[in-house]
Structure formats: C-alpha cells, structure tokens
Image 1 (cartoon, rainbow, N blue to C red):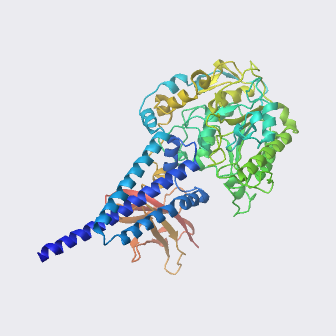
Image 2: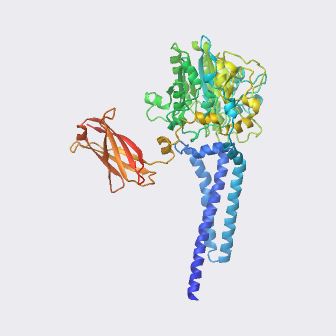
Length: 616
C-alpha cells in the first residue's frame, strides 16, 4: 500500500508538472500569437498574403529599430503578463487538485480556441485559400498579354528629348483633399496637387486627381522601380529583396534603360540610400548601364562626412541639391540624358523630419513630412524649368508604390481607391482623347514614358503596359484590377523563363538565409621576428554539421599565381589560428589576401570568411 501511495504521489507530481508546462506553453503561445496578429494588422492595415510572405522572408538586417521596438512593446508585455498570471494560478491552486486540473483544462481549452480563432482570422483576412490556389495554378495571362520591347518597332524623334524621372517614395494621390480626389479634409500635398492638375495625370475632363494602381509584385521599392520601367511584376523564386545576391538581373528582358542606352542616352540614377539594397544597383547597371550615385558614392567621394547617416542614408534636402549638380553636368554633354532619382524622406514609419519641415499639422509627423516633400519637389521642378535644357526635356513625377506607414491611412473608407501619384510634365505628345479619364497601373508607365519622349511605338503597348497617350485600353481597363491581380499571382511560363537565371543557391543568398556557415577572420599584426602572419578565425555561425577542418587560401599576386593553402589549428577557446609563413612567399611585402574555408563533418566545404593581412 505504501508503495502504491508513493507511486500515486509521483504520478500526481508528474501530472502537476506536465499541466504546469502545458498551461504556460499554451497560454504564452496564444497570448503572443494574438498580440502579434493584432500588431501585424495595425502596422500593415492593408496587408496581403503575398506581402506577409515577403515580410516573413525578408532578412532582419536593415529592418528599422523602431519597427522592432514597436513589436516588442506591443507583444512582449502582454505575453509576460499572461504567463505571470498563469504562474499565480498554479501556485494558488497547487494543493486543490480537482480545482487545479479543472483550471488547467479550462486554460488549455481557452488557449486552443484563441489560437484557432486567430488562425481563422488570418486565413480569412489574408484570403490564404485564394493565395494558395493561385500560386499553384498555371496561367497564360502574362504570356499572352506581354509585348516584347525587343521585338517592337520604336521610332525616336530626330532630336532626342531628355528624361528626368523623379520617383517619390510612397507618394499617393490619397494625400490630397477630398475636393481634389484625395481622401482627407486637408490637402497634405498642395504643390503636387497643382502640378498634377496643371500637367498630365490622365484624369481627362475630371477635376479629381488620377494615378496608377500598384498591382501584385510591384508594392515594394525595388519591384516598383522594376514595374515602372519594364512593365513586368517582380515575381521571383527568391525573397523579394534578395536580387542583390545575384550575378545578373533578369538578363533576357528589355527595359527602359536598355532602350535608351541603345539610343546613346547618358543615364544616371541618384539615391540618398544604399543602391545595392533590393538589387536596385544591379538592375539599373544590367539594364541601361546607369551611373549609380547612391549614399556610398557621395560618402566615398567626400561629399558627406564619413560617419554621416540619417534615415536611410542622407535626407532629401541634400538629394535635391545633388540632383541640380548632376543635371547641370549631364546637360553640358552632347548626349541626351536620362536622369532618374528616388526620394526617401516619406518612407515608413512616419517619415523623416528634416530642418525644412514645418509643423503645420502638429504632432502628425507623416503629414508634415508629406507637405515638406511636396514643397521640395515643386521648388526643384521650378528650378528645372528655369534651365536651358528644360525646353527639350520631359519630367515624370511618380510615387513608387502606396505607403507602408502603419496608421496614416487606417481611417480611409475601404471603398476609396488608393493610387500612386502620377504627373507628366512637358511631354512631347498629348492624349488622343484629352477628356477621357484612364484607369491604369504602374506597368503602363513603361510605354507611356517613351511616348512622352516623342517615341512612336508600334501597337502602343510594351511589357504589360499601354501607352496612355494613345486610345489603346490598358489591362486594368480591359479586365479590372481584381482579375489582373489574381492572374499575376499565378505561375507564368514567361516569368519562369525570364527568372531562370536566378541562382537560388548563390553563396551570398545562402549566407543571408542562414543556410551555410560563416565566421570572422582577423589578420593579426605581422611578427617580423618569426616571419609569421597569423590569421585568427572565430565567431562561427550555422556550422550545424560540425567542423572537420579549417583551411586558408593565401595569395599576394593579382592573378593568384602564388596561391598557397594553410591549415588552421584549433585553439582552446574554440577559435582557429592559421600561421602564414612569409618565407614561402619570398618575404613579399604588402597585402596578403586570405579566403577561409570550412570543411564540415559531411565533407562539404564552404567559404566562410575573407580578410587581408599586411606584411611590412
């Protein structure tokens, strides 16, 4: 009997512990999940499943600290509070077994119901069923409607016009007042409103602003720039902002930059942020051989202090001043030019308030930044119009995509159609039907841009876009936004062919995704008394299959003709040391290039680090 009682006590303790763990686990998970979903939809009110997949796959590197802090502040305290409450319940009822087990069952059941409810909410709100159905469905929509620019006759005017393409981060027609077709009682972009009304936004006889729809796979900056200048969605088999890990950017397609390069245009893109991000530099280099003048260009050329960094690089106030300098330089040359620029101050969250920004909208910082951007753009355009080159220059002012700011547009009526801001200034042509209000997407920017330069396009269509100056219907006018979006999410033979050059196993991509090992290599000061240059290898990550051997490839000659291998030795602290005997290189002075390789227990070898040492 005593043994049975002891056994029962042990069973009860095990059940108690099991119940405690179950309570904490289910309670904590349900609380964190609910808080995360609430935060997610508050941060991205118009989130789609495609965009959620993009956010989940995006690397943490480069994510705003404010965004991370917002998530922590919203989700962690409530989760900790729930867990703390469960612990109090456990302690309070630990001696009342029946009540304890009833409480455990109730909390677990409640947690399961909450989790199921959260999953259902996400499933319904993000239309997961339709998303899964679409991505697993083949469609000929893109293939049938795509017009290859390489196979289309394009006739440029004898005197080629210059192009100035001003992309405004997250700029929408929405920000204007209701009387102008916006969504607000106040007009946060008065100058941009006047510019669109005075020039061409394809609103026809309608007095309300018009703009373009941002369709699927065009809703982040790299994809938006791609859509505007190629007429295609950036539907790729890797994480959306990982094109910078590739050797090329869809080399078999023809974009605006390719066409203008063939016509001997001098092309430059100006960014106040890092050009490499999202593959932007790669795209504009591969398709048009643009001169890339980004944050690092200005820093490395001494035009910014070495440690200067605000917002995404440097602010738009400096960007517009740099743009003036670049334009005067381009205009002094004989070639026609394509000058493209991208602002950043109106990026989420809440924008960047520079010294030019006012406080007319109180503590609504995003509204103040929008108004500031509107004013700066207007002044910049007026400056352009005062220059000699303006007469033969088309200016396009366009948002890249809709805003990603979490709350600025949260109170807008669901039936309101948010559109990307659009204005064509000093175009070489006018709409064939000046009274017709067009329905169009950012795909249509591609052929419309060329038409605004006076280029005659056979068929008036390129990519998935339509020349809006013509009377040809756009895909949105023919099929509607919902149908086009649905078709864009389906598999396309054409997109498969255009993206087949993408290497899903590129080293840089695998490193970013944490799928291959990495390490830190540090060259220690050269010891001339021993003739040894030591390389310390440490901080190993993702070495899940163990470390069988660490070797270093060392060379001094530019053609690697003197390359030698050195095996590193394991140290007591887990680091490795590679001892390079300089005598083996005839005591050559100067830089020693070192690539460090890890061989794991499966026999696979990875390049995990690179460094240079110096021998004096």
